[in-house]
Length: 309
Image 1 (spheres, rainbow, N blue to C red):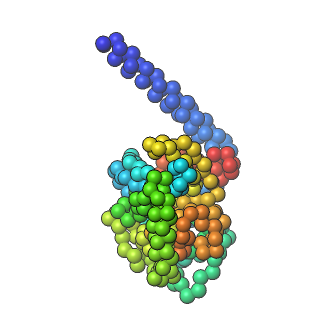
Image 2: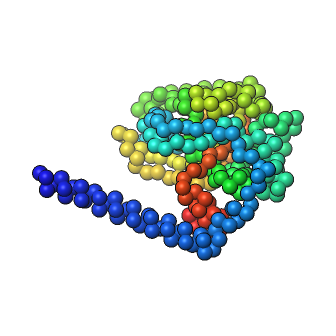
Image 3: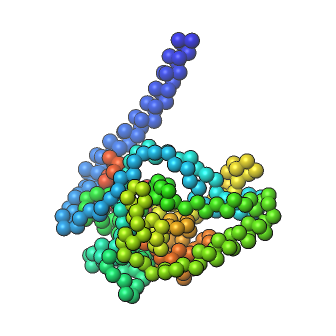
């Protein structure tokens, strides 16, 4: 028995060693290359102390159950997405508020961001809306270069953990592949009709919709937020096993009062481009700070060699 346990420990250590060593060598080589070609020089040189980093909230590690993202199909009929039991192993920081019109305008004035869709009679303290996925990504790159901290759009998973109890559950509770398909269609129609009756779709001042239990503001307001998670269509079997998954990068998940999926170039959600369901009232965004020890090197590599990662 002792020999067997020693063999198992040796096997596990070899397995970990075989993964860890190549990874360390890769990043060591990356570090040397960074120094050789000056990958980090541009980032260091562009820091502007006049641009303050946004106020953030720390989301601490925990477990959470939420609906998986995607359009799920079983036996040719739409079904509720399965519940995911997820674990956040490391904390992350997310902006307390959505990016405001004032903040975004600084990026426009610097020539790093497009103006976005015009919005009349909106104050500077309202969230920036009328922006597409590319606009939001460009702002993240500008903020990264001005603060020296790496900022990115959140993943749908990060957004779910940040939203906490305010993360929506879009389940209808009706299995179209087993129940009368018309029942699910009618329930979906009623829900979508209710969503279309927004009382006031105009963006409101930051903080209007309150904070969740973690101090993150306006999660269930009338501004949906871009994520970096691609929409997907998933075919599942009788027991929920995934039979086929077709990601559609170019269409991204946007989170808010309900999930939606939008084409990357859409600024006005009511103009079309919504993959599933009722489109959001407005499109905006907030960012997460990438605190991984290699984040700056990875960001600089992505900027210098687009599409390589």
